[in-house]
Image (cartoon, rainbow over all chains, first blue to last red):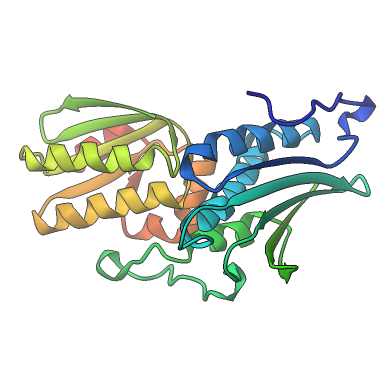
Length: 151
Length: 110
């Protein structure tokens, strides 16, 4: 199922407007979200390794929402993609769950051996490593994680 | 994600193709756990056809490595592709799980 409205690729491959996909925040919807961002990033000219890094960042951000945002029940998460000033591919992950600033978590100890290794914190760590900018804000009862990739 | 299991002389070769993400990684962990319970303790994981891995995939690999440690077994990875290699390096996992350029080298090291 193709999400939202198709945006025709204009000359130069620019996305004409902000595209958005909002679904229940459950793991079953991960593939759909990843397909969506893949299409958006392709339209912007991202390919190969960089396109996969974008998918990685989006997966990690979404999985955090699936796992933590709605402890008492269900909710939705929205993925927005847009281009700013021809040079920045901006992704926003927006949920209405409990306050959760993923950027507050300390980086995992990447030198720990097998016995002491934890996985916690790796997701946001990857996002910070592959993206050009990552910001969090809480507004109107929403967590908004903004992840930027320079075109 | 697809797994292909082959018994080699000194261990078990598991070839993984596709993607290891939050949806598919539990399957990897479950399959490997089953193989370990059957008595296989020496593994080479061939990742030549693995296009993508996320932290969920790393979690499954780590869980498998920890289980093997309790059985005095071992696990190594071979033929990592670009993004997969990057993920292992960024996370520091490349220092705790042996990684080889080729399956041949990995099997020889068993």
